[in-house]
Image 1 (cartoon, rainbow, N blue to C red):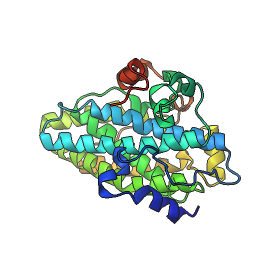
Image 2: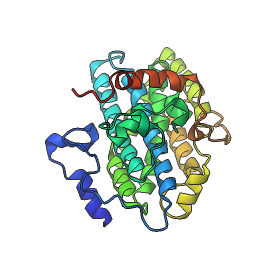
Image 3: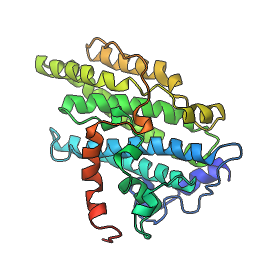
Image 4: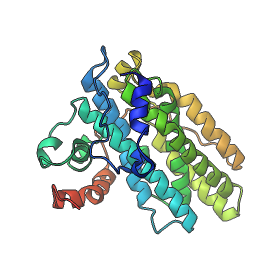
Length: 301
């Protein structure tokens, strides 16, 4: 199926069935040709979409933890909307993962009526998740929220901008839709970083501390896995190492406007999160995310 046709299939829903909010349909990829392009290994494509989907799902969960805690109502709505955008991306990416044949033991753990993307979200154990520490790290104060969001949105936007030309038309369509959402998230976070950095002595102290706390979380985000390298060589994915200069350049520019000295950005580290090696914070997060679905499998509402 031609890329434009796939994009239309993803974005052509009526206004009351916006794909980013997971409403108005049973299958998020209904009507879309999910055939894996020739020359692309289905297992690799599924594994890559799982990485991107897990980052979105886990970061969305971290953002929703801010509901009722934001400093003002308008900001609470903004954070919730960004989380919903990420949740929509996660649903499509996890559905693409399943369509590529990558499910594993979660399919058996979930009931027969549980959609594949829900099985991946709710019935995998912590070691089966492929999110980065940047997405999974526990929340700090509001300054930490906006700095982490700035870093994560900048990184994801740089990747999605390139993924619009992916050889997989489904992944390309998801990326094309996500670019606008991520652009808003990055701009929103950047405005807050500048506002706090160039504000009071206390807000400046807090944003500086947040930068120092978030910077180490970027240690492994530019280190490619073997899956990413194979797919990037075939034109289906992005080598994260190619994003480093652009992402750090954006972060340095925002910090300069915020009257902050850029930190010493960490050198590369093994991609532990991409390989399922997480700290206890992921198990804690998943206990909240998955608890209801596991307590009442196959429940309908």
